[in-house]
Length: 125
Image 1 (tube, rainbow, N blue to C red):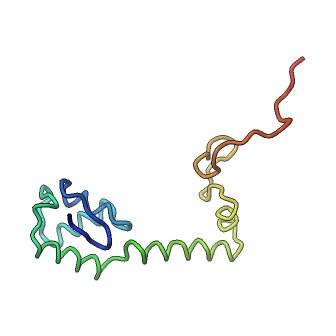
Image 2 (image 1 turned 90 degrees about the horizontal axis):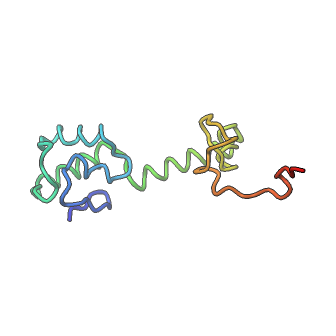
Image 3 (image 1 turned 45 degrees about the horizontal axis):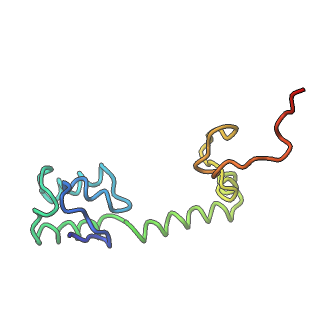
């Protein structure tokens, strides 16, 4: 099993898709890395030679911030917004959507499981 940036890449997947398992590498970056090294898109991870694996590691370490470093940067950015007390920071602090989505309905992913409010239901006579 190939290990890059502390992540085990699945052997049976194509290299272009397996690289996406690394936090900070998406579709565009994975294809750019493959083209830069000269790996064909149809090649699977278990077919890679040690030399190609080493080249992938070197390119990722040299050119991209991934995994732990990137996660730390993102959390520090969110923490900075919260400390400033700006609107986005307040939304993060309250656990509400940050990018202007509606919250009257929906937003369950961000707000969590719906809780009943006592005395809210109308009583019909």
